[in-house]
Length: 411
Ligand SMILES: Nc1ccnc(=O)[nH]1
Image (cartoon, rainbow, N blue to C red; front, side, top):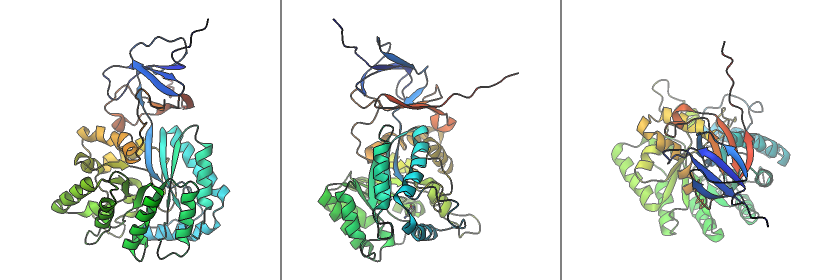
């Protein structure tokens, strides 16, 4: 008589963020079946050797469709409108194959840098039609072995001012769009833009993730309208705003009020440090303002926040390898995070974005998918500071990559 093995795989001696000592993690049918010291098992084993295991990074905001454009466009962009114009001029020539190849390059970077869940924002408008969307749908299917990709479709060039955009957006929502985005500051009628996006969100019963603003003038903004729509439609917990750079320019009293407003209405904030720092404040001759909203402070005051990638190697951000650990380190540096904030900075690319995306099954917990990455550190407090290599990754218990530890040739 054969007895059924309790586990298919055991991770031996994995250090968790919350654990004082390494533990074993038993996997059965792609899910975590047990977490305990010294699990007995006759199945395959992976020796984690006391290194830090995380459930993978969660990227809430990345543009796969317009990534990797350096070399095709001019290289002297300075503002967000110049970057938008540069890409708008190119995208009529994007083919499905081209978007797929550029997106695949970024996805593969993201996978080997430890991202296991990702929301990509996909431009839908008459210039690109649904070609970008078709390409990312294919990427979602072809890379499902390593990463769960969620598709947020949005009208980058505006909605009420861009004839044909709404019909295409609706078609994308019928054909696999999972979240709806928006860009009110690109519209001649930002409030009508927001109202329409929220109408469609309700109609399709999906979450909203907006590009909110991109300047440092707090004398006008769309934040009040976003919160108002969210509350009116009981959409708290289902709405996120990206960039939100105006928040960085608020004096303390107004910031306090805005923080309370965001927390009360259940609107989450995604900060995109690479793009915000690259495009903001360029017109200044000295003492340049940076336009970076402080996500760790907002998170401490009860606003759901994430830090994400946004753009990679394009006119919005001519840098990037889609590493969220590096992004969190970068954020912590420029946002004046103190050592006591480092834990929150790691939360900003793991558990908090998982909540923002309403992922019910994220985390190294019994019952969840065995999504796990191993970082080359035995210290579960300072991964952000130390920037360890991500040595291996697993998706639903299956290994997705391995990276060798460096060898030193000491003399
Ligand atoms: N509207 C935008 C602002 C910043 N980055 C983008 O990709 N799009």
